[in-house]
Amino acid sequence: MRRTFIGALCLFSVSAATALAQQRPDFSGTWLLTRSAGGGRGDVRLPESEWSTEKLPFTAKGRAQFLANKPGKGPRMVAPVNGNDPIGGANPTGLYRALIYARNFEFVQTPTKLVQLFEWGRIFREIYADGRPVPDDIPDGPYWYGYSVGKWEGDTLVVETLALENRAWLDEWGTPFSDQARVQERWRHTAPDRLELRITVTDPVMYEKPWTSMPVVYALQKKGDLKEIIFAPMDEQVFNDRIRNPAGTAATKP
Amino acid sequence: MSRSRSLKLVPFTFGIVLSVMPLFGHHGTGASYDQKKWVKLDGTVTEFLWRNPHSSLYLQGKDDAGKTVNYSIEMFSPGQMVKQGYTRNIFKVGDHVVIEVHPSFTNPGVGECLGCKILVNGKEPGNPVASGNAAQ
Image (tube, rainbow over all chains, first blue to last red; front, side, top):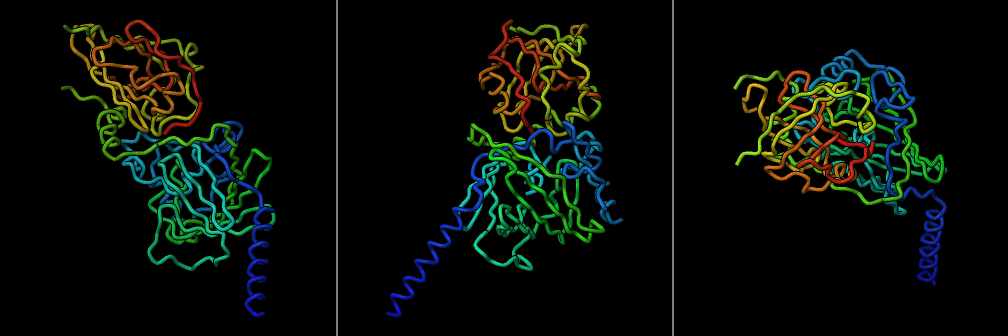
């Protein structure tokens, strides 16, 4: 009798979880950043960061780090040979730089986990959505792509990310974050073929108060195959030596 | 037998090729190359690297004084080049190439061709169409 009851309870729980999962929005598919958001193009004016139409509330340390980061794109761009962009040596992009860059990524969704497969760097990122709590720390972190826990609030997936490797930048323009940073992502459909993301960055080392990004919009792609865009260090070294660095340096006589 | 030809730098009219400019550049290109200027290069292929995220083309020609000049050209990733109608076989060593590039601000030996006009042995290769898509 007791076994029957426990079995029925388990069956009900599984059925309820499946039914709940079926009611959730489906983010599956391949997505590409739209041109009107990110990158300072289109009708969006971005003064400092690809994530924000506003100036960021830097602390003194945050402003100093921002100015010390010398990107190859954006309003403060310098020739890469005079810059310090971490991906110039084929290092990982980090999570948020991958999300604000116009390369395809695929959302793979299961009832307990969502995975983002990024074409750029051919890497992936997991969002655990199995009800686990957000941990205070990740002992073996930091991770270039962070540690993320998600939960559904109605039609919105709310993701908390921590343990981010702060040698990465938040975007192509050198927006910094510290090892204390935590980022909340809010993902939702604005149309069947559009996904919107807003991030809120909480990082008392770099920012005087939490700040929330503009809405960043991704469009569903009909051709969903992901390319292989790998930065092989041996190729990047050759490219830097023969083209990228000479392009920003006065020629010398042979 | 050398097929080298003069490596001449000829300013081009900006408007002619504006339509094939990519909306997203490789990082650092805006600071390294004069993207309001086009120059035409005429030379022989010494090497072509079909690589992610940047392909690169190396030419050799002669300047007006008859001196050998080498030129290095930054190009799109293979994925972007395929979208433009090109293949990995677009250039072979020894091919005669005429190509328009954005010149480096500081180094006349380096240029950028991210969606530009190309002639290989007198013919347009593939079906170059600006993709306007992203490229690192």
